[in-house]
Image (cartoon, rainbow, N blue to C red; front, top):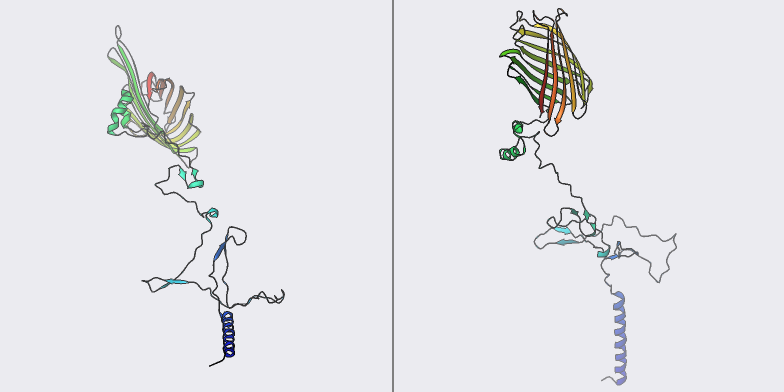
Length: 396
């Protein structure tokens, strides 16, 4: 059995051996490094900053060692080193997918890249955006004319007729069904008569249809006059004229077609018809003034005359219309038709008139007009006929 001295010696040796083994184990243990992390505000700003992980294969100078000088120190070169991307695998999917890490900046410093809008069911019609980014958008003014019926551009539905017939007078009814956009039309009527020692009756009626645009001017004119005295007709004639001007290449020139039909009980023929065409030149063409001259050619025929053949003829004419002011309008129209074979055989037709507005609301005017028809070959009758009329004119 060992003595007490031997046991003390063995105990001291065991303690020394244990301490030596502990020191050796501490020097060879590798401590795990923390994973890479983002540190917001690492350089004095609120911008998220990425701190790269420590690469264990790179040798960095330690604290105890002396750092090399600037000319000697250089970072180690790593050839074709690929960044290790962590992958994850779903339990039901054998494929590997790269794991993407996202970092949210502090809430107080976060600014969204695009404006944020509230859900459509929570948005008001005049507000765009959310929170402090809301902007008020002006709401467009309602169209006040959308509910107003425009009688000149539309034909009403049957259920609207009762309301329209209550609003307009009886003489408006025919034009409730007929669209009249772009038309400037009128009708006229005049009456004069007497009974007693002398019995006479005279009346005149007419209609004018006109439409003007940038490309063409269209005009249709109808009039009829009759006078009787003691039961015997002393005047009975009617005229119809059709005029169409078509602008040529947006210039002051236009091509025209003109035709007319004339009936007169006291002429040497039953009716006369003429058709002409040619070029027109507008000396003035505005909203208030229209002044046009014409040069053309055509032919005329006298039906029921001793000579019913078509007669070639030329045409020289002018047409002036002027709106003097709001209540006064004048017009002058003259056409000269000489025969090709003999210029001494000619006709001249002149119309002049003055319209005076009486009622602005109802578009009633007083019309004073005169027509002069001259024929150089009257076949034994008077060559000239002049008609004067005063009629009440209604524009629509």
